[in-house]
Image (tube, rainbow, N blue to C red; front, side, top):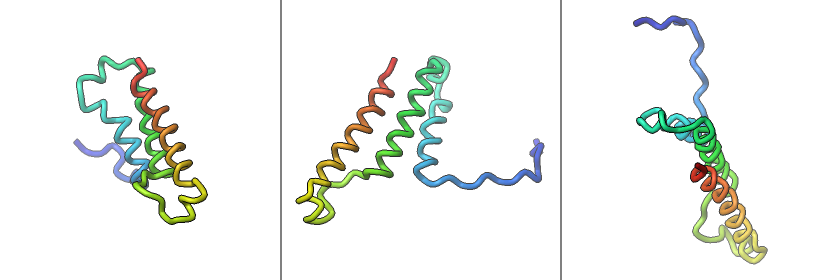
Length: 97
C-alpha cells in the first residue's frame, strides 16, 4: 500500500523523556488488556507516565548528594522528598481502578 500523503512532513523526533511518555501511553495497544481498560484507566496510565517522566527530569534519582554543600543545606533530602511525592501520585494513578 502506498502512503496517502507522500509529501507530508516527517514529525520532529521527541526528546527521550517525551518519547518515554508516548511509549507508556501506547504500550497498552500491544496487548489484549486494551479491551478491558476504561477510558479513565487509560487516562490514568498516561498521566502516571507523564508524572514519572517529570520526576526523572526535574528531580532525577541520585544515590548521594552531589556535593557537601547540597547535603549541608538539606537540598538532597528535599529533592528526594519531592521525587517521592511525584512518584506517589503516579503510583496512585496506576493503581486507580
